[in-house]
Length: 489
Image (cartoon, rainbow, N blue to C red; front, side, top):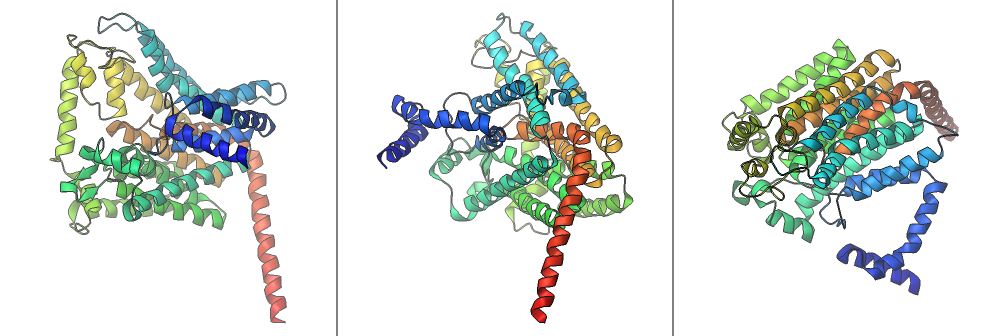
């Protein structure tokens, strides 16, 4: 009991004071046990990665050191285990595809950026490597991890359900923030750093951020996730799974509206439009098109629901004279003037912290980029952002090709189409907000595209798995019916 109390004290000290000597010594036995469990149950580390990635940005979670460290360590551990197991069962070959090609092209551009001396300060290898690791190298780890560890239909279905449950928890946490109250850390952040962007209309409207770092990241994530869950629900042949995903999507869309992220509406629409195109079905295209037109008309041409501030804010997304949109345009115009003399950008890793005040590009480093694509534009120039956009398009086109021409099973085609739609949605969100690489978005949606590329490898097993599930459900129904008839007799 004493040792257990000491362990709890160590955890408390770790959470509130970081890596003290006492906390490290007390937690070491747990680390040893976890390492043993990692090699004994290899999927444990993968599920740990999924959970850790999802909650990294939660306001009450304090990570000592770089935010990316836990996920990167877990990814490298997973790859090390895969290398050790390569002689018995190597799945590295599954990652050799269009997505890997696109990532390597983008990574090659980032490697060239190490020689970028636009600011006239010489090479800053440390800053360059930090930025390249986060926006390029990490994509390689994500592709490899998902290609290797999503190895069976059961693991795939478990992953999709875990993702849905995590998204459902975020919707619940939004409800908790709105109707029960925020934690001390959430309230402190909202009243300080988040006041300007998250408390609007004289304090009468709050943009809720749930388990994410801000409302923009949450809203865009919710739009992309809802896209996937709607498609999973529509295309699944098992009623329980169909109902589960559709109910989760409804809760996630509610959370999307509570975030007040106007871009999320367009992200959701673009994601569902992608599914309509990939479905090649008039039965799906017509009702979806009608529903979206009615929804857009409701926001654009009516005043219904204006009493609700969240609806009123979403309606402002269609206002061309919106002040927030105008500020972004002004920022882009200012960036465009500077970037005309910097076709390769100011350099990866260059920021106001390492650019002197007398340098003309310091101003460029201080203008809020507002979106992921503008951030890449600033740091890699027109050349870099063009290469990045082309690489994202390659990843998407390759995924669509897999769904349209390599898959035969309708449910798997639905999973692939849903993940492609989610990728489009989060990229559109990244065009308007700096959310594409934010946790948990990067791992979730680039990992989702990695899954699309391995679906042809899983299809033979999936057909057997689906038939087995249907047989099990049919058997349960038969037994219940027999029991019911017996009770009547």
